[in-house]
Image (cartoon, rainbow, N blue to C red; front, side, top):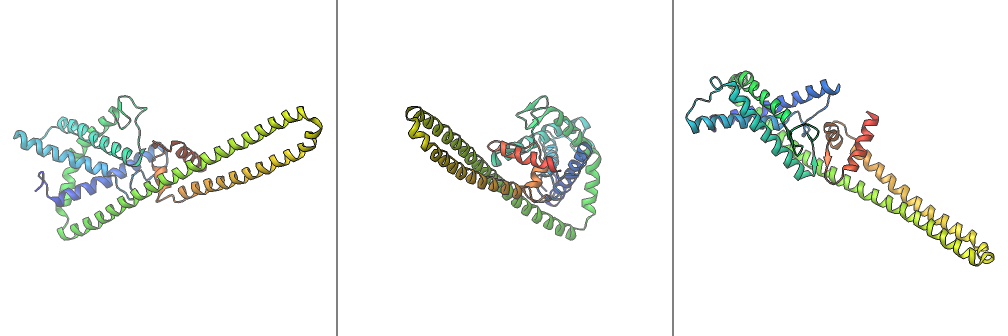
Amino acid sequence: MIFGMTMYQMLWYFMIYSVLGWAIEVCYHAVTLGKVVNRGFLNGPVCPVYGSGVIMVLIVLYEIGQLFGIDTDLDSVSTSILFIIGIIFATFIELVAGFLLDKLFHARWWDYSNNKFNLNGYICLEFSIIWGLAIAFVLRIVQPCFESLVDFIPKLPGMILLIVFYLIFIADIVITVLTVLRLNKELEKMQTIQNSINKISDQMSELIGNTTIKAMDKLSEEKVEMAEKTGDIIENIQDKRNEYELKKAELEDKFEHIKKEIMYQKIFGTRRLLIAFPNIKHQKFQKQLEILLSKYKSIR
């Protein structure tokens, strides 16, 4: 037994609540946005934050009972205690998850900055209360049903299902991490190309401006001689301009190609992540993300 549960039970509860949490997220956004969106950070139908939150609350309840020698069984503990513990530890999980995702991938996948009483946009009072109510409801009403369900499942088929689930779960984590790292690399390429395009535009402006000024100065000094050379100067400017325009067009083509690559796959990959988290904030490449999201919003 670990914290009053077997490892078998813990693995089942984590899986069940991760899937249930994903379903709640999808339903919530279907109602509020009027469309179905895979809101999980992972590709599969799981939101590990929900599973982790419930498991942590169950562990805390057990430890409180052991520490103070009181009965913290779900049948006897008060709903207010479940609510308070749910607020504290579900919020803690969301805070840690948001902070780690931000620091590891340089992106903020959700942001409560516009909500009152928020902490750096990672958590806010409104959703903490919602988490507390949800945890209290789940542990009081839902958990006893899941306990009976897990006990009802034969051990051997149950173990096989768990092994399959967690193998897929681990593979999904690896794929998603690689996808996010790829997204960061593609965004960096977009920024580099944009900087090059801006540099070319500046060079074109400088070339035309400086050459025109020099030509006008010399024309005022040697009107006859320079008048004959004006055509050559204009032709030279046009050749340089064409050269810059060609380079700029090539860079713009590369830029569009990268955008199409990022937004190509809707169900899996980078596009799915951007659709799932349209309010994502990136520490380094926010401008590039806004370009991608505005392109998506214009075609959806």
